[in-house]
Length: 224
Ligand code: ADP
Ligand code: ZN
Image (cartoon, rainbow, N blue to C red; front, side):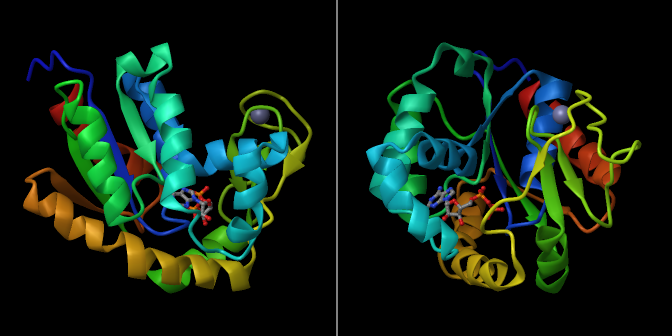
């Protein structure tokens, strides 16, 4: 399919489903730009901006940051020149209001959501996945205490960095809160995108490589 407009691919799924890991792989495989509202919010918190100050406690409690703050951050990011290559939205939209705002933002450019891919997983497994995860402080590559250690202990496979970090909200208690927020506020978007004819579902309980292949087949078909 010859897409004259850059593709807009949404990854839907609970915390721990692998959205961030897979979005980074789709960047590599298809040249799309990963756009993670979680990363943008954490950057705002680290920079101490007004939005970051307001978001910090909400994120640490595992709840959703207000649509107003998230949309302001997203609009800024969508205005950057690199997004003309096409985007993978990771962690956005997370509410019906955000989905409607995204549609309006795209429509203003004559664009539409190309595909919304739901990563289907088992909730209990997510608690374990999220609780053990950490990332390279230098390049952001994701690791896990049990499922994905670096080949050489303490050294990032990707960039050779030796510093790693864990998110403040990646503990069992906060993950349960985030799962509740997902089911209450975000899961309804699956039906929303199904109604728009752009929903795809994949089984995301397999290995990282298996999920990468399943996603690649879909993205290659709709967005190449
Ligand atoms: P995960 O998907 O693993 O929960 P994220 O990095 O996407 O992690 O998000 C971390 C936190 O950032 C969320 O729990 C929420 O507080 C906030 N957040 C991220 N994206 C949004 C969004 N689109 N709307 C509201 N809050 C968001
Ligand atoms: Zn690294």
